[in-house]
Length: 236
Image (cartoon, one colour):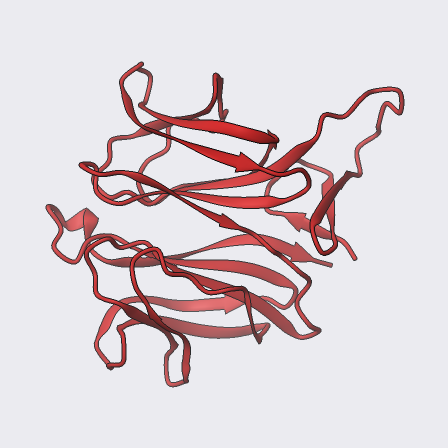
């Protein structure tokens, strides 16, 4: 079974087993030694943070300046204990740093989260597997530091993920694919809608992460509660 990690590299595909192992469709130099790597994606989920540059140890991730609400698709990272650094873009002014350990042939999602006064790094292991035929997979994480616990709900449907407080998340869950959805984030156990993601088509064979972010008491309108989705992988 084959999958593409979204926009990883042109022509690069991956094969997923219990752990995730990676292979390339590009022409290979069989004599070359390939260093052990993990796959890493990053989301800037810290509201009101200035535009940032992201480094792992001394290596700048070549994604350009990253603003709140944006993400970097999967890239290869050397394994072992690494230090993630975040700087005001184009400067040596450090916003935050933290350590993270990557294991060979595994995939990870990193989120810069919380308010600028207390940033933190949230790390998820991406145990991605192929959805069943006719289905997609969807995961939910609450990254709003001051919102109440929340539910993820398919409008006019049932609760998909229940009662997740800040940094709480689900596993990847099956959902019928090739259908349109309106996803809502509710105050847990109520019908109070905090954020909506309308007109969303979830494709069969795709693996998604839905992330709730922003502030219940924002300093400006751009930092209010919101919900977004990113594609982790797709199978063909």
